[in-house]
Length: 241
Image (cartoon, rainbow, N blue to C red; front, side, top):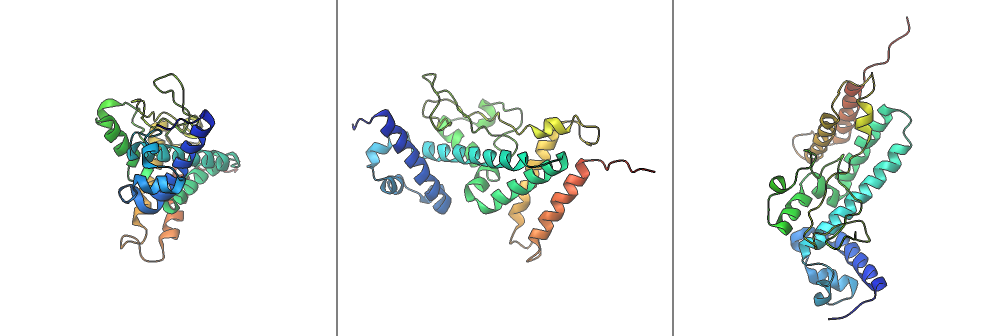
């Protein structure tokens, strides 16, 4: 077995995740082979298994890294919003745009890929083995931060690929819904309901280019949906008499 320095291990692991990201995005999980990934990185397939126990483990690492990137994008975009209404609009527009344009984000949040892969790696049902407070791997949650492995150390890329047998945590949430429900002009008092509402809107992207939405009108439908939902969340400010 080839021995690598810690620096080489970090580099090769990052290269595998990057190559996996590109291949899984283009071809999907089933059509991507371990040899495709190792060929792209320039290592042998036997070396691959020094870094990941399986293709599923690599896929999980890719999905978690992609989820972290989405949260970074959301946090940067929301930071520029000046009002809670703008925050809600920004979160919805950014997330819907990512689901539409990024196949990994779509598989992650709409098709529930991270849950399926996590269950395969752990040989159990996600719902039976993990209580995430009803959030699950969907918009408004996800963790993207570091996890400790069985040795008490977190992976350098902030992910736990389940190599150590640890389950993936889904405990990170965007803080905005918790802040919105404390406002007098916000119509919902439970942040979990707000997150559930925002998660459910992601599925509208499945109607794109289908008979459900008339041809050429999807963008208008999505925009109208965002405006209607945000208007419904926040009460109109009182008018001066």
